[in-house]
Image (cartoon, rainbow, N blue to C red; front, top):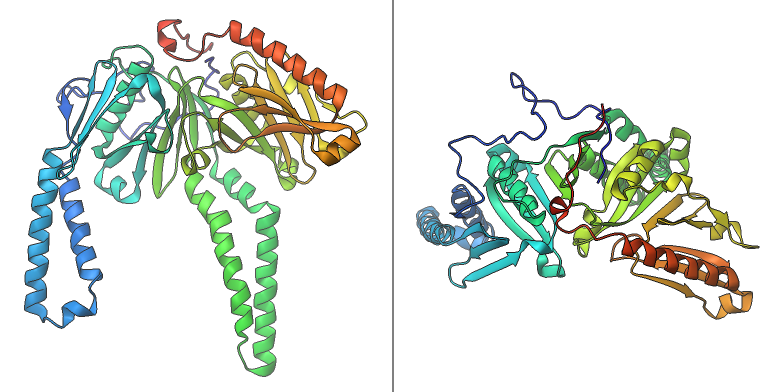
Length: 467
C-alpha cells in the first residue's frame, strides 16, 4: 500500500501529552505482554453480568414477585445475585485467550467448554468497538473477522482500551508475518470529516428534505384542523409519526455514527475511527477491499462531495453492510485518491468511459484499462463502481429474452459478496464479447504480476510518505 503526505490533521494528543511518533510502541513497562501467555478479560465483566441477570429477574416475573411481599422479593433477588456471582466468576476464571505461534487460541464456557484455535492466515479485519457504557468504564470489545462465513467472527469483550489496542496490533503483526511483539505500525493522516460538512451533507438529501417538508405540511394541516373545529385529527399524528421516525433513522442515525470520523493509512491497512455512542476503530488489512463504489446523490453534486463504499472480504451478511462505508462524506478528489491507495498504482479518474453503442442514457457508461473495470450509471443518484482485475472472480455477459430481442447484453464483474455488484447494461452483443475478452486478458496478466496481499511484511518494506 502506498502512502499520502500528511496534509490532513491527525487525531490530537491528550492534553499535556506529546503526540505519538510514527513507529513508537506506546506500551507501559508494567503492562503484560499480550503476545505471550494466556490472558483473561477484565474483571468488570463479572459485576456487569450479575447486574444484568438481576435486572432481568426483577423485570420478567413482574407482578408475580409483588405477591410474595417485599422481604421474599429481596431474599429471592439476593439468591439470584449470589448464584449469578458464582457462575459469572467461575466462567470468567475458566475463559482465556492468547497467541500461540501464528494462532489465536480462545477458551470459553463453564458448563459447555469451547476451545478455538484459529490460524491468523485467515485474518480478514480487526475492529475495536466501544459502546457508550464501555467508554465510561474504559473498556473495549475486539472483533476479529476471519474467512469462513457467518460463524467466523470472534468477539473478545470487556478488555481494557490499552489491552485491546495491543492485541489488535499483535494480531495484525502475526497476520503480516511479523512477531507478535512488533511495535504498533505507524500511521499517516488521510482525511478528517468536519462536523459541519457531515451535518450539511446528511441534511442536503432529497429523502431528508422531502420528509421535512411533508412533516411540516402535516403539522400545519393538523393545526388548521384544530383551530377550525377544535378537534384533534388522529390521522395527522398517524402520518407525522412515521415521518419523524424515518428522519431519526435517516438523519440522526448516520450523524451519531459518523461524528468525529477520522481515517489514516498504515502498513497494516486502512484505519477508520468514528462514532459517539459506539466508538469504533476499524482496520481493513491491505488487499481485503475487493471493489469500491463512489455514490453521488443529486444534491451532493453541487457540493462536490461523494460517499465511498466497498466490498470488504471477510465481513458476512449484516456485518458486511455495517462495515461497507469507507468514507461517509468526502470531496470527490479525496475519494479518487483513496481508490489509488487501495488499489496501488491505479487511477480510476483517468479511465475513459464510453456509453453503450446506440444504447439509452440510463444504461450508463463503461470503461476498463490494464488495471481497472469502471462502470457508471444513474441520473438522479450517480454511482461509479470500480473493480481491479486482480480482485475479479469472474467476467460474465448475460442477456434475457427481451435483451436478446434488442440485441444487447449486460456485462458483469463478479467479486466477493457485498453491496457492490459492478455491471453495465445495454451493450451490443459484439461489444459485450469484446469487453469480456479484453477484461479476461487483462485479468490474467494482472494476476501473474500480483502475488496477493498475504504476509505483505515479509516481501517489502513500506516507506514513509514524502514530505
